[in-house]
Amino acid sequence: MNNADLSLTELPVTPLDANYEPWLFQSMIDELATNELGIGFIYTVLEHLAKRYDLTDAVVVLEHDVLTTQEFRLAGAAVNADHAGRLAAAPGVYCEPDIVPPIELDAVRTACQLALSLHMARFTSATDALTSISNRRTFDTALSNSAVRSARYGWAFTVVLIDLKDFKVVNDRSGHDVGDRLLRHFGLALRQSVRQGDLAARVGGDEFAVILNNAEGHEAMGFVERLRENVLRAGESIEFTTGTATSPRDSTDPAELMRIADARLYAKRGIIHR
Amino acid sequence: MISPTEEDFELELRALPGVVNVGFRYSEKGDVDAVALVAHGDHTGIVRVQAKQIIALYYPDATVSVEEMKPVAAPSRGAAGDAGRVVLVRAEFNSHEGFCEVHLNVNGRVAVGRSENGPLIGGAEATLDALRQLDFDIPFYLVGSVNVATVRGWPVIVTLRPRANEADRHGIAQADTELISSAKATLNALNRYLSQLDNFG
Image (cartoon, rainbow over all chains, first blue to last red; front, side, top):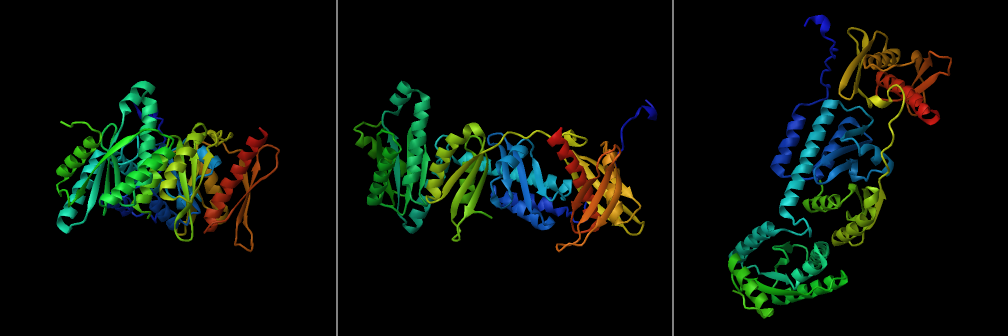
């Protein structure tokens, strides 16, 4: 091969924009890593970009395995449909006016993609996908933390275990779709029934658990009543049984609290629990 | 920065099937009083129901709207239509050497157009030079580039004349410098030409 065979066009090298600061991207990554930031960071980056270049609008379009296409617009505005239609096909950063250097747009897009992926990973690792309430892992951690505080400071909290009655029958007779819908509605009813600061979790197939902070017996009764009302309001006729244990009165050991609540639940159902 | 709870709230809405974007409007007290979602058309019904349930948990008084995302628009036709968007990366006047440089980017390809004229004419010439380096067929030549005084500043008007016997094309833009205005006005003239092709083609 000689030089005459080469048909490559040599592209001119574009110098970095005078305003581009190489630490910008690294500082974004550092902040994401150290502060465990989520999608709010995407808006912060867009605001930074808008201020830096005096932009009137900026949109970042990202792709995610689970969420598919996601758009984030400056100031948290929903993209209007016509604009969204065009943008949805192409991940990237879109600015008005179109004056931001590509190298900086790439840095912004990468940082935003990272923020979305990190947040989604944290969210899915802590949340039950079907019911959108906390999962077993989150519940165990929260229970352990509450028990430590209760042992140290005497702060009361109550664990409520909830078991759906005959859920297996519903699943077998009506199919998993109906069973899943029931679980989703029950999860929603749980979220409607807990107070701010409490934690509701799905800890098994049809088993749920709630931590009611700063609550003892009568407050737990109030919660169960609210739950029954919200389940009925959701149009579900499923029955459920509850068992409770209160710290520090019953115990300050997480495993012991769970055992006591479990025993009371099965005692209510009249079943000998082995 | 929004709070972690609000971030989770937004992420939960975004995780609903078909949701592409979520927007919030805040009351004077700082509470969310309206939530707007953009979702793919075949999902808007179920999104509306599920979003209302989730939003009611956090902000019971907030209104909820779900906007259907329109189909993807067809790409523009014409010289630059299918080749992607032309991005003006930078435009500067080298006062030592006495020339203008305009950097354009299309799909990662970068071209630097140059002109030895001043910012007003040179901005337009350098823009056309960069476009031709990017293999665009530009069926125009530059007739003039002028700035005009208005109550809002000094926008630049660029006039391009077609090689065929057609009417002149004009573009107008106003930016921080005369050079950037001239470059953007040139692109504006070409965009208006392309949009007319779309409308009448």
